[in-house]
Image (cartoon, rainbow, N blue to C red; front, side, top):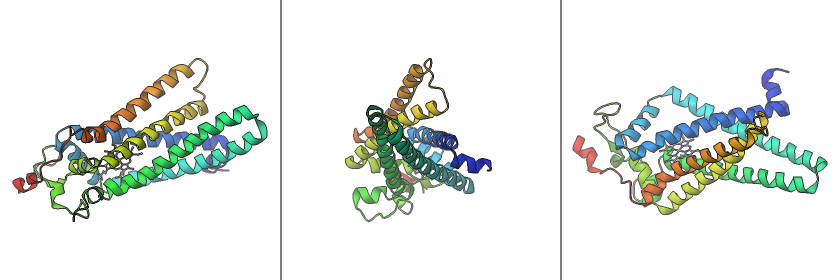
Length: 255
Ligand code: HEM
């Protein structure tokens, strides 16, 4: 059997796939968070970052497709491993072990499902630009077409160019408390998902030896907590009134 075939068909191969796709997805969410934290800077930073991504053209699509493939493989392997573990445990283990393992994997499944639902909502919200339409129910169907979501005078990348005001869209999106709270809950559950994900990845690659297990656990908890707080800070700051949208007049003033 070839390498790809055995990756998908053997138990160890699937664990490798799970770890590799997990690392790709963690890489994405860290990069995405670092990019998003620019919302705390001058509007040109986040807007410039958005324009830079959109201008990548075919490269952006390669990254998007790669991400989508990683998500599908991750979910598919998780499902297969869960079914296999469940079947194996029913035969081999006693009652106590079964309850512990099932609780942990149930948590993984539910946090995974909520994160997936969040991503679908999130794409509709920001990538397809329905944020302000759901927020204000105004006659502004789509931010990509709305005049007030364009800004000019752009010093970061392309001075003077007119770009989409991604930062204003994000802030207006989070001014709706229910949306902001939903994001905080979703990134909280994603952090819990990561906590278990890192644990099982370290277990699979054999790093959780008696010597290292305690230290690894502490680093994992610190990372997941920092990830949660940094993400939640964005909707939190909007709700607290610390982040304000750009003035719509800014566009007109630059024309
Ligand atoms: C407060 C937290 C977050 C904020 C403010 C935020 C903001 C955004 C924005 C503004 C976009 C659109 C970018 C553009 O079109 O230029 C976007 C896209 C995206 N976000 Fe987030 N995001 C957050 C959290 C997350 C999380 C936790 C995930 C993953 C679990 C995620 C996954 C994605 C994905 C997959 C895209 C689509 C990227 C693409 O193909 O262009 N985001 N996000």
